[in-house]
Image (tube, rainbow, N blue to C red; front, side, top):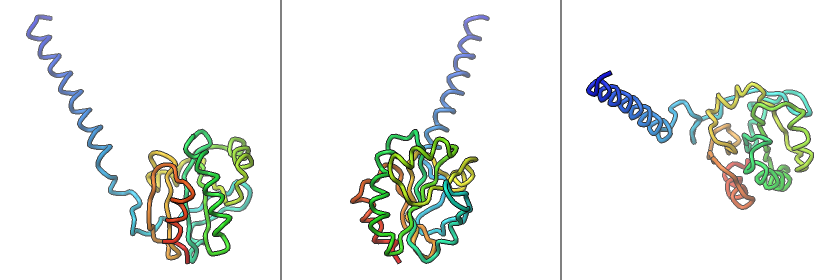
Length: 174
């Protein structure tokens, strides 16, 4: 290959790399048009509980719902779980339901985690990640705050603490 051909090949490779970089940046900064947004109705779903029958989101209409997507391997999720449990205990008699949606793990992995953190709110198993895809979940933890009418009032990506959770609960209680 002569010198001018190598230059053209290098330019072509750099061009392809530049296009890939631009696409990656664009994808990470532009919001997904199909994502569940604040003000929209939370999509209904049905999932099996870790220790119980299937649960549908629709069956919780009339209650404030915290829908939290998490995994046992996620360090921020581990730090957030005690805060979610504490707020659930504090507000469950006032119409709050906390739902933990575990992403892609088996009961064998999830059960010890739930016991370790003393969680008694419903834990749902999204083994095939169908609901995770429906809600377009990227980084976890991701938490949806859903009002009694089923409308998403807030979406929070990242770790929540007790004070943050409590301030958001006031917007979704019946």
